[in-house]
Amino acid sequence: MATALIILAAGMGTRMNSDLPKVLHQIAGAPMLIHAMKSGASLEPERTVIVAGHGAEAVGKAGQGWDDRAEVVLQAEQLGTGHGVAQAQSALADFNGDAIVLYGDTPFIRPETLTAMAAARQFHDVVVLGFQAADPGRYGRLVTAGEALEKIVEYKDATDKERTITLCNSGVIAADAATLFDLVAAVKNDNAAGEYYLTDIVEIARARGLSATVVRCEEAETMGINSRAELAVAEGAFQAARRAEVLADGVTLQAPDTVYFAHDTVVGRDAVIEPNVVFGPHVTIESGATIRAFSHLEGCHVSRGAVVGPYARLRPGAELAENVRIGNFVEVKNAQIAEGAKVNHLSYIGDATVGAATNIGAGTITCNYDGVFKHRTVIGERVFVGSNTMLVAPVSLGDDSMTASGSVITRDVPAAALALSRAPQEVKPGLAKRMFEKLKSKRAKSAKGA
Ligand code: UD1
Ligand code: CA
Image (cartoon, rainbow, N blue to C red; front, top):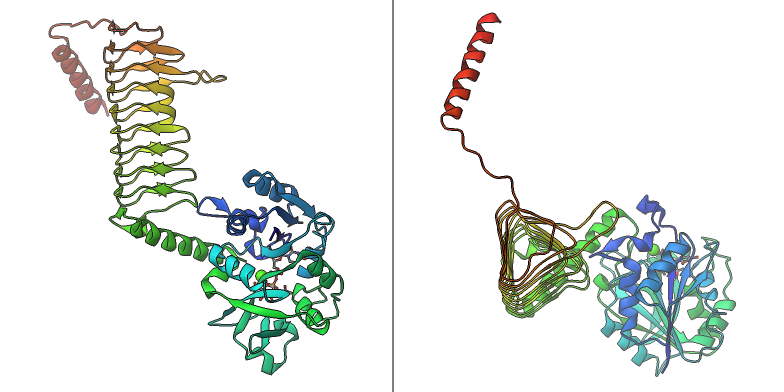
């Protein structure tokens, strides 16, 4: 069965108190919209329609950045969830199959839950995702009779008796797309909020002789985000779940609560992650690598047996081959470091390639930026770069070459050559002693004068 996702993401999110549209606030380094799209992606949707309103351009850009096939429709005025879904109708006019409505601010629906809903659709015309709420608060209430769902009643419109129901509406609804749009077209706004409620389609469907049912999920999955406080709770929930998964996958986390993963971090079995490590987006760590304490990694790849940190920073495009060592206070950006190479202390390696078994001395800097352009540094195999070498790119060091400590290297160094470029040292016998005496007597005189 072909599936279309309709993602409601038009709301302003007033309570976020932000210039950024609510669905673009991030959890684990990705906008919550993308989390919703990722859950939906498990159904391998043929079509994805994002209903955008506030900040529509930015919302559309983010959605299409993740899935360039996603379509964006505008809901200029937010007249209710039913009205939101109706905006997707023309985009899906040529679509035959099931539609499933997700909210852009509800990031934790599990793929298994959506699969269960798709399965329930074989037997029912409308399938609603519900949950037992610990505190039902202002959620819509699901009025059921056995397996059948009779209607959804919004809190504002509910009777006292209906408000005692604890089975609540998550917002996720599945139906045949054409049926869904038919039902939504019949929704009116004569209710307490004066909105077109998507939830009204259940009662309308039942009145037309169609069937409706509830698929249940854990309350945690349906967590919606309306405020910064809820965003922080959602981040915590994501991290807790991800840490547990990573541990189960055979990764050592010495202090799991201090390690922060991105939505897409991949860590291989038998890797060791020490305390206080932060992963930004797009990081892969192979089996048996070690990330030592207080390191920050994003957009990088760390191969088997490599050791990173403590206090290392790997930025986008850092690719470490097997058994590479990146030590304390080293920053690596857009650089390929070949097998067994070492950059152990206080260095910046950017826009560079470093050959196998090369050793980069403490304080080495690739001077990659001239203020306008970026330039590459190419370092061969088994090179010894002396401490505090400035490599003024574009520049290359041949295999088995060497630079003297403190050198400023501006020209290419051939294989096996030694490059030395620093001011010759002068030694003045006894001068230090005479200087100190002179300075001390000056101090004594000025103290007397004061
Ligand atoms: C909705 C449900 C409620 C359910 C709750 C779960 C309705 C009428 N009510 O209530 O039964 O328990 O979600 O969280 O559906 N949106 C649009 N366009 C609009 C209105 C909303 O895109 O015109 C988007 C919002 O940005 C948000 C989502 O739809 O992402 C839900 O809207 P919201 O107003 O938060 O619905 P609730 O009142 O929470
Ligand atoms: Ca809401």
